[in-house]
Length: 276
Figure 1: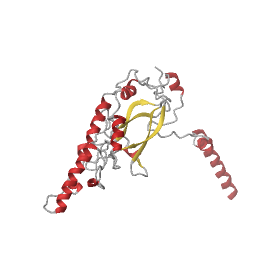
Figure 2 (figure 1 turned 180 degrees about the vertical axis):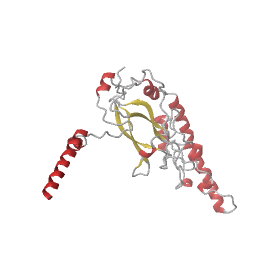
Figure 3 (figure 1 turned 90 degrees about the horizontal axis):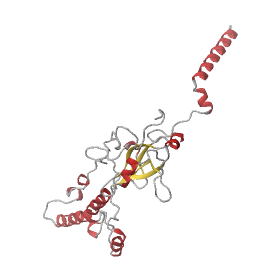
Figure 4 (figure 1 turned 45 degrees about the vertical axis):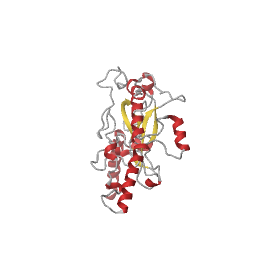
């Protein structure tokens, strides 16, 4: 194998599994725990007491947890205005492969329920009844199970040709409360957390290089020769490589700096002679 072409894909290498990042995001995904993220009764205003407001708050608390389990958002006037949002995190996972432009390749995982696990017919029926989508904890578990039974995306990342063509993709990361780390422990839920930026909607977003796809949705992979010939214009972290061209590039060249230094000494000598 040529020394200037790194090993990729299904070629011989130490591991085919996605590498573990410093943040703790590895092959098993984000360390996010829905149980830890679920708000406690005290956080939603439930208190032990015998006043009417305590009773009302207790009833609202029951409705809150019912909605969190089933819908992930308010379904009745009782929970209107309460901090309801589908639990889960979305994140990019590093695959261990290199894009043809030199950047590390990622794949995007949606851990926040989409509400489509029971199909479009059920979605339509829920809408007709004036109910929100099923994006609660229970439907989310069903979505996770469905995704786990479809290993296609991960297998493609692991056992593809090893020479992917990539595209830059901006996606929402973290949870739907705008958090990307555990508020108690500070543990990061996403990789490369410093590159996450807050959007106008208050949520966090990242831009990462992912597998490019054609109009039919099929992943685009290159031959080893095509991959090697593609200019490596990006660093591994996805930032552009700086070009040293024109005047700036010339002035930073060692030979040029030597010539400038000599000319400076000559000019200094001429000026010193004239002053005498």
